[in-house]
Image (cartoon, rainbow, N blue to C red; front, top):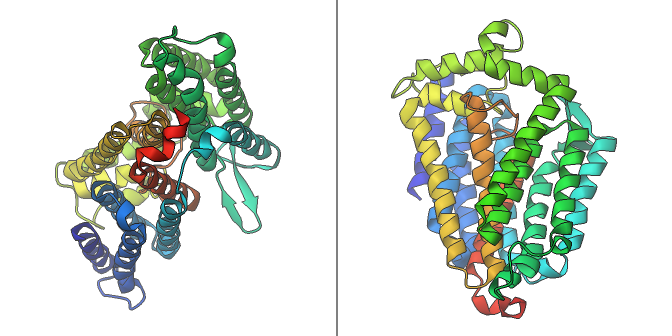
Length: 406
């Protein structure tokens, strides 16, 4: 409650700072945001988790305030996406009365993920050198936002049956190559299709999800090391094949050499980070609009400039609370499938946040994916709220629901 009330007040402050008055329509943004959050909490009922929802609502609120400050013309749209996301979260938690179907339909889930990527290659729309968007009428979305969820569901169902059972039976690990075959095939095909799309940010996200799920299922650090080596090899190959990837790597290594060209975006981001200081310039007082795509790829930088290091750390702490609580809920599951599902879904949010924050502060090359719950974008926001809904539902189901899987 206090998070949403504080968020409503922040929206009001942003309105006043931007316009020096309270436009009748825009002054409703805060109350509407509060109503959406309260509505979602009520619909979740007994399945809601206070820590998980508090972190999610806090991130959403901070993101909405910064989007309104940067692009007031998009604020109403983002508010609509938030309302839809909250509804999808509540719907997912209400409709999911069992998760045994994941193991039964695992191959259908996996092939659906590959099919979406293949359709994007054929019919996708290219943005920023990557063919990552599908358009349906006047609506467009990123299929990878659906693929990442399907991938976790497939891996949880398959690994539970073929790896965790072998582990429980004290068989040698890893299991036979025949058992690993479908996982490795899905991994290879996913990365191949993403290479054909030239969407390497999404490829990095999917590699991270594969690595996390394999480690959760086996506990073998060797798999993590092998995945990192593969990722490094794929990065080198992609930089040699695709000009836009090579340019991003060069900009990452030395943005100052191209400060008037391709390095302008990251250079301005670094200036914004430096000017924020400890407490920031103040909400709606800084100049994050000088950073291209500040409301999407670089919204973390905009927050760091206007709210300072303290504001940036608050956002990172919210992600930390969200992920830590999610993994705690996973550990509380008594059945293996439930553990893998909750832990894998939480890992999506953790990996995605690490990739985009790392790119914006120049720890890794910029990949162009969104910061969960914070960046502007409908498909990302709705899919991430769907993930939260699944986590709430699965974690609340009793162990007896999954006894038939063991």
